[in-house]
Length: 310
Ligand code: ATP
Image (cartoon, rainbow, N blue to C red):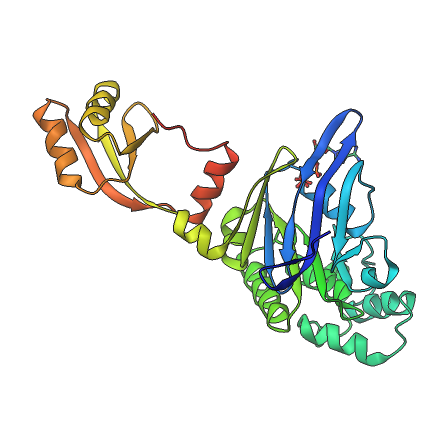
């Protein structure tokens, strides 16, 4: 099995990973590839199969079919599993204890007796100075950072964070983003799942889009930015006729109908020519202009199953 690509080691590689629940596939033949050092944003709507995939990677759920390799080794390998830190839901956090007590407790369970491991993860996550405050009085952001602190015990090379942005306010999101970048700078590989597209698009270096248990696309940040093309949008009185005229006059331009008035055109070089042609054919143009498709829009398009070209 190949575990190295583009010169780097694959931190995670799944091959044809499948999970069936009662005859229904939650994850279907998923080939996921994450290189060492990536911040991989795993994106999909609720129920798309993200959590099921992550649980299989962490060894909490068993695949029905397929294979998972971490750093080139099978996921069942106990040595490689020690390189993994996981935040899946907020399990394992005791609300009546302080952040430090929570971390000490888990450190003891993991056989990490030294105080330094505890101090290191509290400092990394900005929880070193919260003192005697009990976790039940923490903000959502602090709770998520505590979850990351627990995942960081044992200094793992690979971090898996399931929906860590959920329920965070803008300040909490900013803090978490900075923490993730700090961990990335230290050389850690991070897999982070979310259905909040806009936020994930600001954090990640790579993306995987999952829909109905299947991988729709994997791409780098640069590839994604390239794909977010400019488009020319027009608002017209008669969409049907305008489309027919556009197809005839500009056969290379792709058109997408948004609603009863609006058409989006991709690949327009001469916008004045489009307007002029429509007006000459007695089509009223209420508005027209160039726009840039943002990352969130691209994801939505992919998850709707692609753009409808006419
Ligand atoms: P969410 O963000 O809502 O958790 P998700 O993308 O993580 O969404 P999964 O939780 O992986 O999606 O769920 C994928 C599909 O598998 C869903 O249809 C879900 O109902 C189903 N599913 C998940 N866990 C189980 C289970 N233990 N038993 C039966 N069906 C399940």
